[in-house]
Amino acid sequence: MSDPFVLDGFLPYRVAVLAGRLSREFSRVYQERFGLSRAEWRVMAHLSQEAEVSVREIHARVDMDKSKVSRAATRLEEAGIVTKRISERDRRLIVLALTEKGSAMMDELARAAQAYQGELLQRLGPGAEGFLAGMGALMSEEEARTHRHPGGAGQPASE
Image (cartoon, rainbow, N blue to C red; front, top):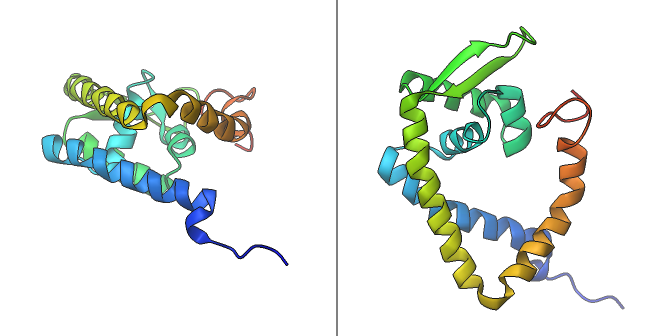
């Protein structure tokens, strides 16, 4: 006879619950300081990594519906935080970039994110390195599928 299924011991469930909790904890920072939604934070964080990024690339990298990325980008553009334009490489794509205001905001948010990560690593204690290595092992297959291919960084191989 097999062991009974215990949801609280099921790794995908536990990771999803943990991710939600950690996301909500950090969301207080960007919501309180800047009034940003989770989608807006994710768009800005991704834009902080590259000068210009398409909505399609952000959608692929941050695991968020294209419509949510587009709505977040529109709100950020209206607030003067990002610019939107049609890609010169591919006229079907909308390319986003942080404005000076957005870059200054992201600098502050990056410091807050780094401080939060430091807090999390302290909470993990001596097991932090092993935890990060385990996460890397679990993510490596998905990362290899979606981010490392001839089509360019950030675009799934199917696009």
